Image (cartoon, rainbow, N blue to C red; front, side, top):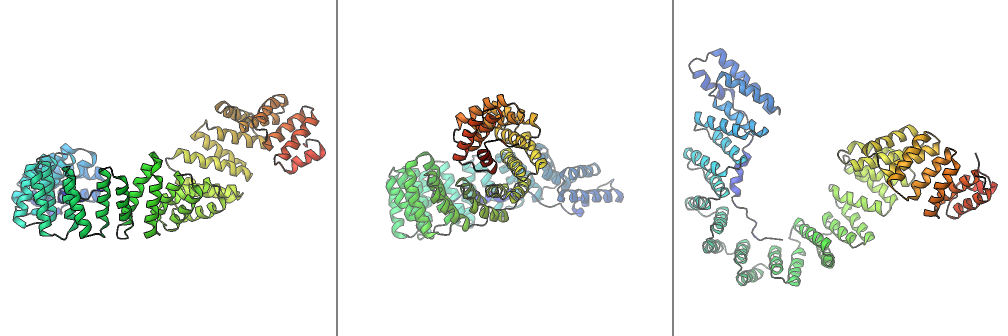
Length: 581
């Protein structure tokens, strides 16, 4: 996982990718050549200058189309204006017109070969086209104007290397080193190129020189050891690592590469021991430690036998980094994967305590809190998360869920309503918001809002059985729109077979429509599927009473009471042995 050599080949050359947004040249630059040309009068010069300035304003304002139109207008007055062609070469790549951009930049160079920005604009377009060989040749021409510019030489070497002309790139770096003396990044790039050229002995010699010049720098020994590993010379690599452990025993990165070395040798226990030593070092950045925990999480998901070692590493990291939010979060993930949810919850709580900026930690914390049905604390923590992450939808959702479960329906509705603003492309989450709004507004007897929320949910998914059922049930409880309720409920039962709640809803709608015989057929099915569900038992008792079976009705009302039913209306039915109107 960890590689000792952290140097990146040709990193110096990357500077030139940043030369993308050079500001517009002054109006004096764009008009100087125009005024000097035969046939251009003062009026033309003024129009050209004004058009150019306006084009630059549009470019700066982020309006590339308007800027391009005005720059092209400039070319109508002066078709050989290098500055205008340069500006167009910077705009055209925005719409992926790379060939035309390259043509504009090349024409600007032909007009003014000494202008470095025109050359760099051309090179930039070639980079976008992945034409690194062409970019290297373009650098050759630019460097003729600036032969002492080492940055340009390094950038040229980079492009030669990217075009796989390794020998040419190596020669440039070698010349730079001879001219300016030893510099680490140059030497490292030379070594990388020597390996590409399969000149392994020369690469080794360069590494030896680096150590000779600075024998106290442990990184150079690591580079050499990795070189030996690349050559499959593991005994030489081990010798270097042993030397490093003597020379710098407190360096955590030495132990990391030792862990990697032993892993590649198939020595799992030795590798794990070295990794523990590295992670226990307070000098090793916690971000690096967390990456190893992430690696173990990914591995343990496929191979659960790695979990004990993962727990061990978490303990090691948290011992020296007790306030690391990410470390606590990874420990929580390991515990959750091992089904130790209460322990995972504690670790997520600590993770949230130590970060007020990591949204994903809070989201996982609230998700587990909701799953564990800790609604009192969920209400408190989701409220805090809403303050910390006001543009994230999930905290509002969890707050709505918590308040719904606590029967704080007004606050629940407000949270669901407010959170909808921050749901964008996640249709599933949007559906959940609307569904809950439908339920909560019904509890608040705000029926128009409830119906609208359910309708909005069904626009997202017209075949969501849960929404269809709830919408139908609450309509039936109000004895409103019963024909629509019947259709909605029938559809939910077509979608999901043998669901006691859905069957009960359909039977209850038929009851409200006074279709008692049909209602009894459905409700008896619901009772068979859920013989201990108090509401279903009560509904069945009601339909039996309407069918002239009061003794059987009383029997099921009592069963409903035994199953937990304790509503005032149920108790009255039992005491009076009658179904009230």
